[in-house]
Length: 168
Image (cartoon, rainbow, N blue to C red; front, side):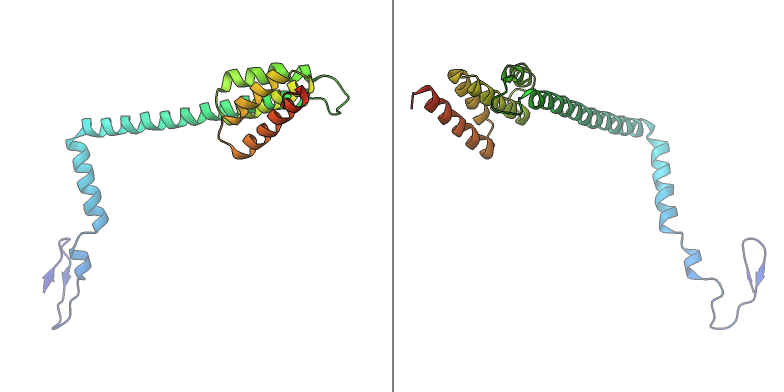
């Protein structure tokens, strides 16, 4: 006879195992979780430091993404203002209304892609206003971003300004 820990008596037959071997060995998850809990209980300051580090990284990443999203929305609003201020027809005046949003875009966003696009639109506006030297300067600023398409458009704009001025 075999007696279980709870007191129940089990009959043993020859050659047959009544208690499974898996029940004799503790589960891997239970072993790992008990070791992890013992470590946490022994080293509470380590766990607090790790949790604090994760919190700082989480706040930093979340804050950085929020800041980048905010800057992107600001640039989109300024680009929308600038494009909506441009006249729809070539004979229609109003290219002067494009210049303030373009200047603000360049000042606030430095050498980013929205600032380069703003510089290009400013160059087009100054070209339409026959301010050829300022147009070439704006096209030069738009070329400095590294975007090949915008650089090509800016070169065409610079050539047009030079041709219109007669400096070709």
